[in-house]
Length: 100
Image 1 (cartoon, rainbow, N blue to C red):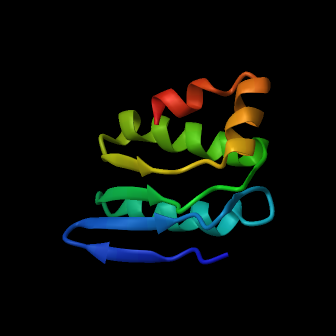
Image 2 (cartoon, one colour; image 1 turned 45 degrees about the vertical axis):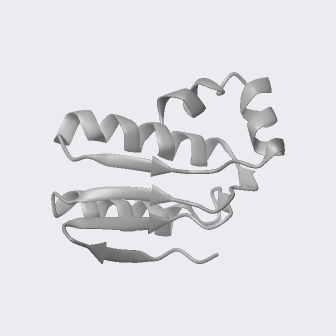
């Protein structure tokens, strides 16, 4: 996994790697919180998410909700593999694709 935070003109990119799961979400979450605390625009990015579990889904929903609470802009540039997209649809979380 290559989770990195990179500064760009008052914005921060949080790279998720190819997995949003309990094994790696803690590091991603900490980068996200650090960016939010600086009142910077946060860009959550991935090349292709090949693995997601409930923890990953909860993180994405939280990131979207925190945007309205803190008034900090959160941009999502995420690509989901076909398997992950099908998983989200089968489990009732397909709306996450529409809200982020």
